[in-house]
Image 1 (cartoon, rainbow, N blue to C red):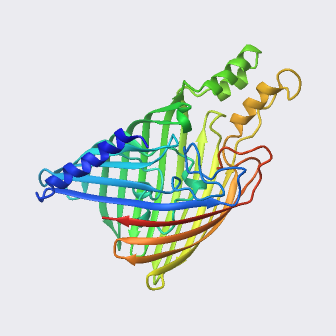
Image 2 (image 1 turned 90 degrees about the vertical axis):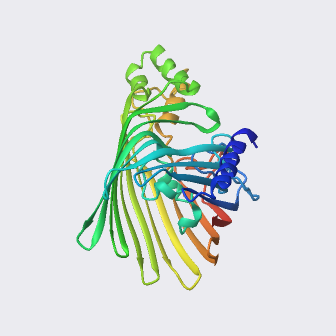
Length: 396
C-alpha cells in the first residue's frame, strides 16, 4: 500500500474530528469491505482502470474502498467541502485520491454555485457511485459505468432547484477540465472545455434524469498508440493514422435514467450513448435495469446490463496479411477496444444495522468478440464467467 496518500486522508479525518466540536464542522464517511472471486484463472474481473482484478480466489481489492468527507459552514451562504477516497485504482496498490474539494456559495434559496473540484454529472448516481450503502447493488454495472472514466471536474457548476407540479426539478450545469490515467499509468488523457448538463425530476416515488456531457480530449503519452499511429503514417496510411489519433478530439456522452421506490418495490435503469471523433475511443451504447423488492430488512434483486460497440471494430483499407499484419492488428485492437458483453446478476441486501448492510451478489458475465471488461486475459479466453462478491457497506 502507498502510505503517503492514505496518511493524507487519515490526517484530514483526524484534523476534522479534532475540530468537530465546533458545530460548523461535520465529518462523515463511507466504505465497503468486500471479497470478490470468479470461476476462472484465464482472465481477471476488474472495475474501470484497475490494473489487476479477481480470479478464482477471493480478492479484496476490486470492490473495497474507504471515503471520508469533511465540510465547514462559514456562514449562511458559504461552505467548503473536501472528500478523499481510498481504493485500488490505476495501480495494483491501495491509494488515496482527493475526489472533492470545492467552495459552495448559496446565491438564493433556489440557486447555488460551486467552485473547485467536484463530481462530474455523468451518470444517475455519479455523486454517490462509490458509496455502496446508498446503492442496492454491490457495484455499479461495469457495462455502463466503464464508458466515461471520469470522476471529477475542476471548474465550476451552478445548480438550480424549483418546484414543478407535484414534484421538484433540479438543473445542473458544469464547466471545467480534468484528466485521468490509464491502468498502470499507461497514458494520461487530458480533457478541456468539458461541459455537463444534468436534469433531475423527482415526483414522489419516481425519479427521472437526463444527462449530457461533451468535451475535447488529448492523449499524447501512450507509447503503444503512438507506435501504431507512427507506423501507419510511415507506410502511407495517413487516413487511418488520423482516425486513431487523439488530439483535441470531440467526445460526448448522453444518458437517461429512471428510479422507482414504490410500495416495497425498487427499480433503477439507465441508458447511455457515447460518441467520439476518434476510432481509438469507439462509439458505444450501454444500458442496465435493476428490479428488487424490500421485504423487512432484506432486499433481493435482479440486474441485467449490456454494452455494444456502434462503430466498426476493424480499420478498413488496411492489409491483413504480409509484413504489415502486426501493425494492422494493433490498429484493429484500438478500433475494437470497447468492451462488448452482457451480464445477469442476482443479489441480496440485508440491512442488519442502521448504518451498515451486508450484500451478496452473483454475476454471470458473457463477453463477446474479445475479453469484454475483463483484464489480463490469457490466449483463448472466452466466457461466460461467474463472479461472486460478498461485502459490507457502511456509513458513519
